[in-house]
Image (tube, rainbow, N blue to C red; front, side, top):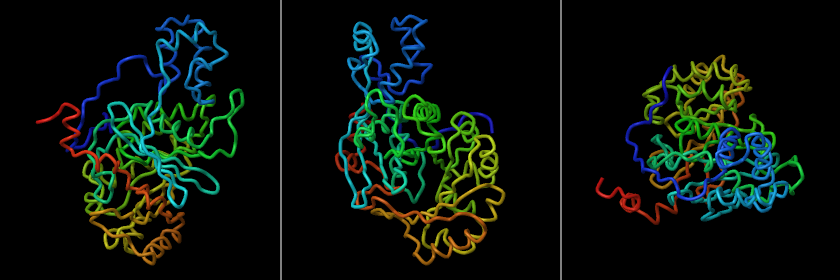
Length: 394
């Protein structure tokens, strides 16, 4: 399993032009922030202290204006303001579902747009964030997957999604106060647009910022990364991030998974499971979450349930059963409630937790597999997007 994960075939990429002007400090690791401060004139002996001060202002208290960083001298604040900015994605639209789910369409560099979903529950608030504009994969049941990849998100654009929602929820502590318990945004899931493990470095850096003890302070156990099965990067995730892992599994035979999750043609079920058996030991995770979308007549039989239990034998796991979220033109139908219950019962009796996910935000197309920047699709054709990016005729 050596080498880096290749991008899948049939990918449309748009070259990204870095914005001109001052550098954005959001998304830089502590090490990178130290380097850019020294390069901009901060004395090396002071750099570690300055990193700690600026880090708290940005990630603990949510401050975006250097002038408010009152434990820095006025002269130093002015120097920072001349050379740097603190910027996060711009909210284009914000929708609230009847069940309280919030969906945000945000604009990033280059004018591209991605979607974020916040799901409030009694005991926690989960934020579903995106890692790519579009997606490298073409999972046939997923609406998001019908949008081709445009580009990877930067670490700033990934952690910026968390900051956008903390702004909207009014969840930054008062300046000088420490982070509060019982927060509204308590969990992050990398289950939005894109395959996180095809953008590993940026995802890793963003999640390290989210977990930092002097900033947003989320435990690694409250962060779940969902992958379709990019096997070479699974070991790196355990070693370099250590978060919880979820796998879009969805089938119990290679024949069916090849159709539902085409990446299976590159790394089949056996290869994927071999990597998953090692993950909990290296990352010190409690268990792997297997995501399993319930498709009528495709993967929902009693035989499938029994095969699933046999396949994952020996892996600490829970099975999330996901009623298929139908979308216009979808080639599949949702399994009946009775069929889902029967499937769940077989898995449960085998000793695995098998909760059935309650669909959230369906009325605003915010449910699992539905994210696709519908606003952009309504506004622009593929040809228009290509023209704006200077790719007309390509």
